[in-house]
Length: 204
Length: 204
DNA sequence: CGTATGCTCAAACGATCGTTTGAACCGCCT
DNA sequence: AGGCGGTTCAAACGATCGTTTGAGCATACG
Image (cartoon, rainbow over all chains, first blue to last red; front, side):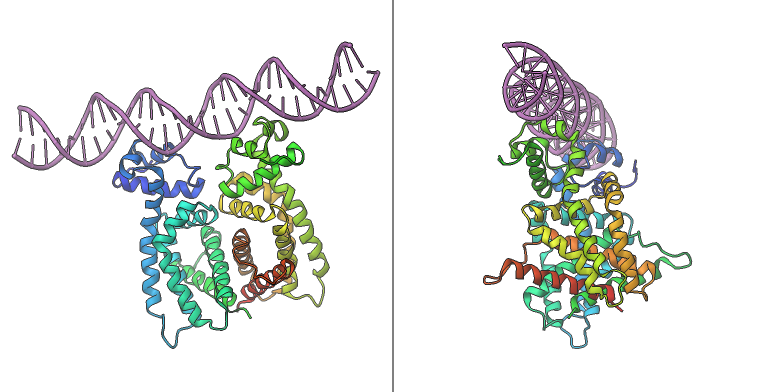
């Protein structure tokens, strides 16, 4: 039972963990509030409903994540020397750094669930709030891959995001060797993912 | 309400559809039996429990799918002229042909959900019953990509399966152009996926 | 001191879940 | 005709779900 932080923060933390482990429907408010060490009614008092709690769990992480992604993209977008790998790095590195925060890796599992569950309400929420990020990256990919038709480009981006979401939701399976620092391991991981994605996007 | 076939078949069909749409927990036996046009108790009578129904939904498709995959793999495995693309074709083509069967495309969504939900019971079932398929493909990938360490190979295969599962669970989003036959469209799709996967596996 | 205000609490609400029950019904064999 | 295994049926079981309620508590302000 977590006893640090405000009630809202404890609920958000416990929600992230349990949503990752059991899914949005699978995690009950009773399990959740019990793990957070708060009263059952606290969720509806502070968030209004379980669905709005889900949205806040996403907001807490995605606001920061996508701000970092856009900041990194801005440094390389629409510039002459930019390589495909630079854009992919701007997309992937912030997500992996988030994975290293407390509970951050769990959040990537939550995100993977959101992709698999074809929940219209959740997809609409994500599209309305964070769709512009994907649109900016897509525009830059289109610039760097002019020989791909719009159709092919969309498809390949879909494949890449699928691979990355899948991989990062299971992140941690790739064991860090002893003697390798956490930072060096993450750097290796970023480069592995970037190389894979760049090769896929560039495929003949 | 479906009225064709035996009670067991109608349940399996409705289960596949509803599991794809709402998830394993999200689809209730009452929705399911109502859609199948059978009595609520029929599920427990014919399958024993909801969990065993889930397993049968997987079995019905995966037995045939993996048999086709292994048959296709056997034709190219351990032979001198085999290209990476041939092995990937053996893995991907049967899945896409299944997607074209009635309800088959829905099954790929079910499969994507099973990946995202980290349900231990389900993962154990899939591993015990179909793990040998992935092991055979992995062995052949290892033969064709000798310069990759075992660690790197496992990771890239994980990325590829993630991309393919993600893409095929959303299959149908890539619209078939008018004037292109269903068969030609599927052939194009297979080659797109194979090229992407081969490039990713082969990345420097 | 009295009283708002923000928050927590135990308890209960109605709804829905998977499962079980026992009677009714079916075609088939002797 | 009569009984019998296989199947279907409506109904109910206990459990658990998200949400609501109203009393109780703490702190701050007049």
